[in-house]
Length: 286
Image 1 (cartoon, helix red, strand yellow):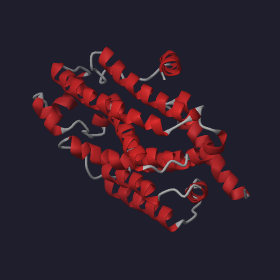
Image 2 (cartoon, one colour):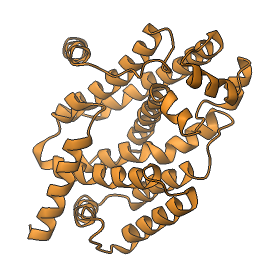
Image 3 (tube, helix red, strand yellow):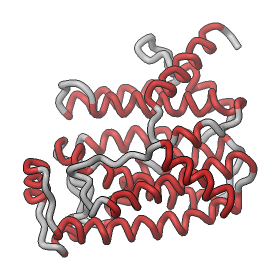
C-alpha cells in the first residue's frame, strides 16, 4: 500500500473511532481484514453528513457542496479537502462495490436540504432507501454477499434502524425543523407539526404523541422482525454483529416505551449494561 493510500485509510479509521456511537460493541466484531474498508465507508457518509448539517451555510450552498462532493466521487478526483477519498476509491474497487449505493447516500443528504415534511410511511421509507439501506447493501457486498433476498431483508433492518434513530432524535430533528413522523399519522392522533414544536419548547408531551409513537414503534418492530431473516444468509462474526445491531435497535425502541414514549425530555441511548444484556441474549437465544 502506498503512503498516500495508507494515510487516507488512517484518516478514515481515526474518524470512525472518534465518532462511532450507535453500536460500539458490534464494531469490535468486524474482522480486521474488513475494518479499513468499513472505516472508509463510514468516513464517506460522515463527511457528507457534516456537509449537509453542520455550519452556517444555507440549504442552497449545502446542496451545491454535496453535488460537488458527489462529482468528486463519480470522477474519482483527489482533493486535499477530502483526504478520505483515496481510501474510498480503493475500497470500492477492491470489493467491486455498487457505486449507486454511495451516490444514493449523497442524494439523501441533498434531500435533507430540500424536503422536511413527509406525508406517509411510503415517503419516509423512500427516504430510508437512500439514507440507510445503501449502508447495509455496501456491508453485504464487502462480505461478498450479493443475494437479492438478503438485500431485501437488509433493507428492512436498515430502514428500521433509521426510523429508530428518528424516534430517538425526535427533539434534535424538530429543532432543525425536520418532521419525519408521517403527516397522516399525526392527523390520525389530532397532532400538527406546530404541536410537535410546542412539545420541544415546553419539554413536555401528551398522550397524542405517545399514541402516535406507539403505533410508529410497532410498525418499526415488525420491520426488525422481518429483517431478522437476513441472519439465515450470514455466518460467523458478521452474523453475530448484525444480530447485535438488530437487538440494539429493538432495545432502543423498548427504552422509549419504558420511558412513557417521551424522547423529547430524554434522548435515550444504550448503556454498557444494556449491551451486556443484549450480548447474553444473543449468545444464549441465537
